Amino acid sequence: MIDRSVTHATFTLERLYPAAAARVFAAWANPKAKARWFSTPDADHELDFRVGGREVNRSHPDSDLSLTFESLYRDIVPDERIVYTSMLHVGDDLATVSLTTVAFCPADGGTRLILTEQGTFLDGREEPSWRKHGTGDWLDALGVELGAGGHE
Image (cartoon, rainbow, N blue to C red):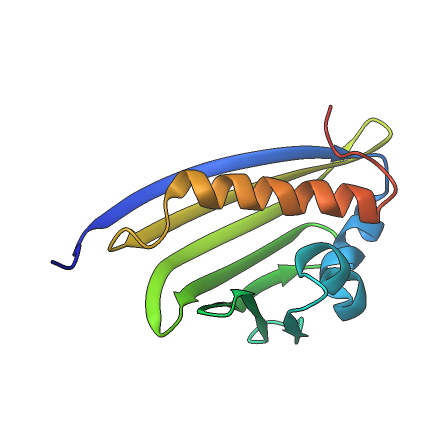
């Protein structure tokens, strides 16, 4: 029997990076930098960072499974805010649809990044806790990219 469930969840993650907002923002906007911290070496990553632009990350964690994460950029205010909508497909099946807002806020000695994701998780293909954990991992990888840990 197929699980035809819908789970709605919202989470917020914060990181403090000892870098100027322009530098943190640039790590999201530059395709090579974003691929280093957001993707994996074996994945196919594309980034068209502009309002209306698209980002796609295709990976194959094992030979039987493909994951495609696709985002559309809805709002970009340089050094301040990014808003995007995303879909995650597991194989041909839609697993998640989400709206994400990333805010870059000045903080003592750097930038406080606040990421809020509102997700719709379909048919048990992904759990909100998995997404929150994975998103935290790539925010930590962004800290490494910036030469800092990212945690307070």
